[in-house]
Amino acid sequence: MTEYTIPKLSLASTWKEIEFPPLKNDLLLRAAKGEETERAPVWVMRQAGRYLPEFMEVRKSHSFFECCQTPSIASALTLQPIDRYPRLDASIIFCDILVVPQAMGLEVLMEPSRGPVLPNPLVTPADFSRLREDVDVQKELGYLFEAITMTRKGLAGRVPLIGFCGAPWTLMAYMCEGGGSKTFEKSKSWLYKYPEESKALLLRVADVCADLLVGQVLAGAQMLQVFDSWAGELTPYQFKTFALPPLLHISHKVRHVLKTLGHPGVAITLFAKGANAPSTYALLADPAVTGYDNLGLDWTVDPVEVRELVGKKVNLQGNFDPTVLYGGKEGIEQEIKRASERWLKAGGGWIANLGHGITPNVKPEDMGWFLECVHKYSARS
Ligand SMILES: Cc1c2[nH]c(c1CCC(=O)O)Cc1[nH]c(c(CCC(=O)O)c1C)Cc1[nH]c(c(CCC(=O)O)c1C)Cc1[nH]c(c(C)c1CCC(=O)O)C2
Image (cartoon, rainbow, N blue to C red; front, side, top):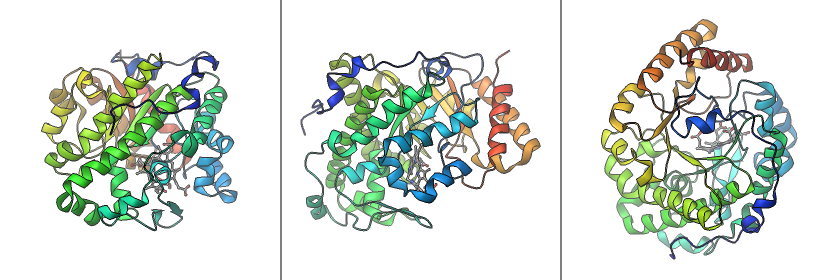
C-alpha cells in the first residue's frame, strides 16, 4: 500500500469555502487540548439512540441504515439530544462504525433483536476477493460528509460536532464473526491462523477509516473519535501487534492529509474499551507518538490510577459506569459526586462521558439528571 495517498474527496479543494456559525461552547475543545476547564465538558456515547422516544418515533418509519444514509435524517437524529439536553457539551454525528465494511463491499444489516448482522462474513483470506480493491470514500460514504455539514449548520454553534469511525480490529471482528460475538472465536482464530493476512486486512480497513475521518473533518467535524469497542478481547501482545499499527496508520494519515490540504487539524480520541493493561497505557501515553490526544476509559478503571500510568501529556475521557443511569436520582448523584472527585484528583484534561454507550432502557429524565450532576460535581473550585 502506498502510504498516505490523498483521498479523492470533493471537499479537498472547497472545504475552506463552507461557512459555519461561530462556536459558542468550546469547553470540549479546550479540555481536548489538556486544559483543566472550569467544569468537565460532558457528552455520552450513543446519545442519539434508543432511549429517546423521539428517536424511536423516527425509527418507526425508517430502517437503521436508511437513517444513517439520509443526511437530513442523520442530522435530525444528531440534533435530538442537543435540543432536549442543553447541558450536553458536544454532539456526535449519527452514523455507525459498520458503514466502513459496507463501503468495502460487505453487506451489513441491522436486525431488531440481534443488532448488526453481516450475512457473508470473511471466512478465510481467500474471501479478500470479495472486498473492493480501492474504496472511493466519496462515492460510498459521501452521505456522511453531507450529514456533517448540514448538522454543523443546524447546531448553530451551540456545541462542537464529533466525527467518528470504528477501529480496524473492532471492524475486523464484525467482518469475520458476521455480527456480535461472545467468544470472538472466528475473528481471534484469524490472528493465530493467518497473522500476516490479518495485518493486511487491518491495514486495508485502516486506510478506509482514515479517508472517512479526513472527509468528516473537511465537511465540518471539529473533533474525532475512533471506537475500538472490542480491544479488550485481545491480549496486550495482540493489541500491540495487531490493533495498534492500524490505529497509528489512521491517526498519522489523518494528520498528514489534513496538513497537506492546509487544514489546521483536530483533536482525536481513542476509545479502546478494555485495553487496560499498564503496558498498553504506556504505548498510548504520548500524543506526539500516537497521534491520539485523548484516551477514552471504560468504567472498570480508576482515573487516578490511569493518570499515574499515562502521565499528563494525554487527556482522558470517561468513565462513569453506564449502569449508574439505572441507579435512581439519589444513586446517580452519589456516584457522580464520588467519581468526579477521583477525576478532579487525577488532574489534566478531562472530558466527562460514560465508560460505554448509554443503553436503551434509560429514562430520558435520568439522563438529564446525570448531566446536571456532572455539571455540578465536575466543577473545579
Ligand atoms: C460497536 C459499535 C457499533 N456502532 C458503534 C459502535 C462503537 C461504540 C460501542 O461500542 O457501542 C458506534 C455508534 N453507533 C451509533 C453511533 C451514533 C452516535 C452516537 O453515539 O449517538 C455511534 C458512535 C448509532 C447506533 N448504532 C446502533 C443503534 C441502535 C439500533 C437501532 O436503532 O435499531 C444506534 C442508535 C446499532 C448498533 N451498532 C453497533 C451495534 C453493536 C449495535 C446494536 C446495539 C444497539 O442497538 O444499541 C455497532
